[in-house]
Amino acid sequence: MTGSITILTGPAGAGKTTVARTVAAMRPRAVHLHTDDFWGFIVSGGILPYLPDADRQNHTVLEAIAAAAFAYAKGGYEVVADGVVGPWMLDHYTRAAAAHPGIPLRYVVLRPDLEVTLHRALARTAPDALTDGDVVADLWHRFSQLGDLEAHVIDTSSLDLGETAQAVEAAMASPDFLV
View (cartoon, rainbow, N blue to C red):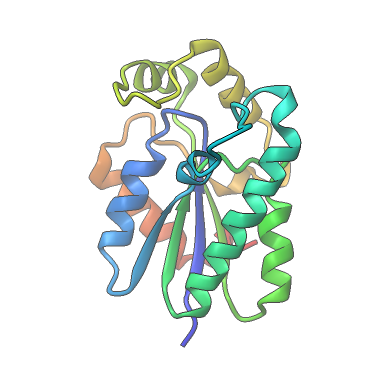
């Protein structure tokens, strides 16, 4: 029995972690893969992932995340991986998917409007939360230009947690979100 992988992504402040945890908990056999943790595993020489010098590090971390996601899915878990995975990093997952035929890979982008995104991001209080408005706005703009992946966006500007979780559940059941 194999599982599946849903990448739940979007800019900082979009609600990825809360929604991923909620959606995973609603499933009988699931993993919430909180990808921010993978950057925390670097104890020496780490670079903030949004800085230009972090590109090599970020590719390494995404390779590790994709490998972990597919290992869990191969073991029969439905994986909900939350993190900033723009189209510029999606290839790490699609390459892993090619090596694991039969494991569905979905891409779901939570994208509230810019004002809501900034409000949510700046209101966060966790010590490691990204609350730099300029960085958050830059990420939002990067997620506003998705090209062919625009159909994978859920506008959560006016949705509460329950409504967003329902929208993600519907996306996970739809072939339209497969990559």
